[in-house]
Image 1 (cartoon, rainbow, N blue to C red):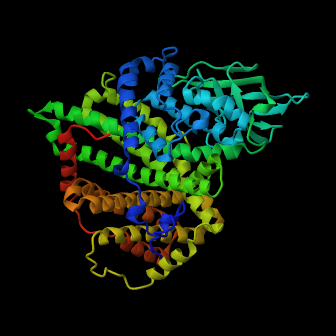
Image 2: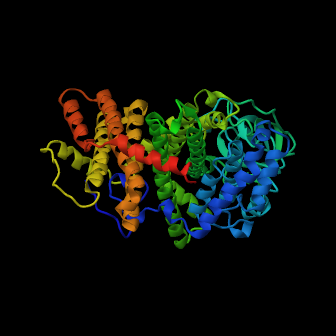
Length: 597
């Protein structure tokens, strides 16, 4: 297996699996510049001053409240962070726009509304619109004068977006497209001014259209009553001979899937960012409760069981943050590279996001599941009070659940992770064959128990290399054994995806820790090293379990025994006292009475 570090050329999407990444190539949150830190602080201040004081009113869907908050966010530039200045935006880099999503992620239903507006409500027009369309719509969306929404899902087409039944037919005079059908679960649908809606022209050409509130034949249903994100406007859209001006066709006829799927790549990463922001605030809420709630004449924060929960929450968030900004920087650098090669801004960012679509899918899964874990444990820390609506952690718990469903369910994203890797390998974009064959040969050799390398982080780096070997071994054998049938073996594919997700995040945590130690020294990084080492230790067991489940599902006899032995070898790590490490992690957060935003 090749582990040569690519110092001069950034790794392509998915290449982390077969090549070693250098710490100095990985961007970390500790490197936010002064302007980015100001943006981060501004987001926190906006939530504290404008959103959280009226959160109960938001949940009651008070008329006009959410649109007014979006307009206020627009006045502060929070709706146009990454929009070019020529269209009224700030023209900031991808890392900064990701930071805004994180910074506003703790705003419950408001976070959903603003993410939908700045993402799927604005980006399709910005990236695929004509000059005239962009000049008409983007400045008003960037300022918040107009609010954006997006209509893709239909009652009978959830994950199968291309199975949409809404139709469009060009009128006899060629002036309008006549739309008929309906869309459901439309965020911001009750108050938006502009909608990107997908329909099939002549029943088969999947295409996108820009639709304005007030178009003839376009109506909305009543607000949906949901388990969580109650303050997020969610309605159905109805089109009955809806007249859409022909010039409002977005992109090319029959190419709507390109718009839908490319926007999703960015949306998945941004969802991870928002989930991280929400998780940080929920953790702070739980820490502050634990330090004030007393049982048996002492704060419950002093109990080992509570410390363990707080530490686990911190570990998962720190690791998620490491992978998030590592990927955001990769996309940012790729965008710059494509622009330097002559690509316009829209093609450059879409191309960069597509390059790292594998990583975006993994981030979506990990980030949404971290938030679910954090709010679940937050309720547990609150005990019976956590089940009361009087405590905000109950709202966080309910609102979290949707994140594992939209932007592609986590099951779909797990399957996509493996599918994209395999397809890139078949197209020659990823050279998996050589590394996979090398791992296969290694299985037949005498186990290498290490060379006694005592250089800094040698054991941790070897563990990551071995985790990657485990993935290549299991995936390679599964493809060879199952061939074309592998697509129907979703359980095996999700096992492999879980191995990949754990490995990518473990490597991201290691790269961040290595970079921080290089900058600050080991003694100043005890907190970060405890987090990294604990996650690495825990990941080994998780990767082993996922690999074992996959192997047992398709292999038998000697092949099975050999692979299980190989898996055991590749997931073996040194003994580690995670209890003490977690106590140190918890002590730091309890001492500060918060998780740093």
